[in-house]
Image 1: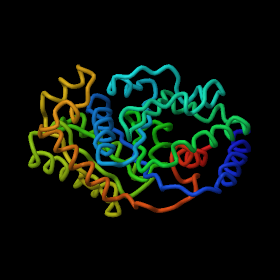
Image 2: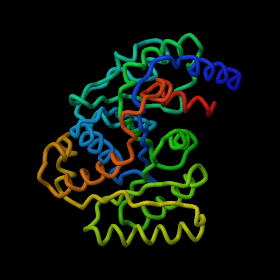
Image 3: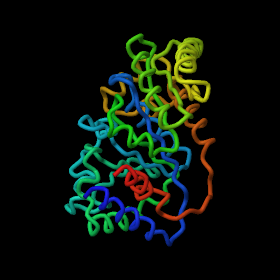
Length: 291
C-alpha cells in the first residue's frame, strides 16, 4: 500500500515541474550523540549564511527533541505535520527569523509521509513553492543513526557530523560516519568545543585514520571547520540568543563564518532548475523515494 502510494506521489512530484527556480542546496547536520552542540551550530550557521545575503531555510527534523524554536527564541503553534494533515498551510507554519532566514518547524520526521494521500500532498507541493527561492536548507536532524535520520541524510546534498573532543562522543561520531558511508562517500566533520585548530585537526586525523582503515579508501571525510570552546556559546544558549548575533566580534563567530564560507563555496549559484529540485518541495521529492 505504501509503495503504491509512494509511486503515485513520485508521479505527482514529477508532473509538478513547470516553473523555474534556484537550486536549493540541502545540508543535513547530524551527530553521534546528543549534547555536542548540533542545533547550536545549525542555527548559527543558518543565521550567518542569511546575513551573507543567501536565502536560507532551516528545517527542524530532530525527532522528539525539536528545539530550534528555543534557539531562535520564537513560539511554534503548528508544524509541518499540521500541513500534511490538512490543518494548516505551509505559509501558516513558516516563522521568519531574519530578512533572509525562515524556520520550518517539523518535530516528527518519521511521520512526515504517513499523511501523504494524493490530494493533501498535491496541495502541499503547490503551497511549498513559497520556499522555492531558497539557496540553502539546513536540516537539523536528530542524534544517532535511526532509520528516519538516515532518510534525511540520504536526501541531503551535504552531510556534516558534529562532535566534541570527548572519547565517548568521538566513538559515537565514528559509528555515525560508518553508517553514513553506506549511503555516500563525501562526509563533512565539524569539531566543536575544541581548544583551537591544533586540537581540532588532531582529533579529525584520528577519526579519519580509523575510518579509512575500517571503511575503505573511498571515504572522503573532510574537516569543514571547528568551533572553539567559549563560555559565550553556553551563555547565549541560556539567553535564547545566537552567539553569532550576540557576540559578533568573538572568535566563535569567526569560526562559524569560516564554516559558512566553506559551505557557500559549494553552492552553484544562479542555476535554474524545476521546483521539484528546490525548496521544501524539493526535499519532499527526495524523501518520497524512501517510501
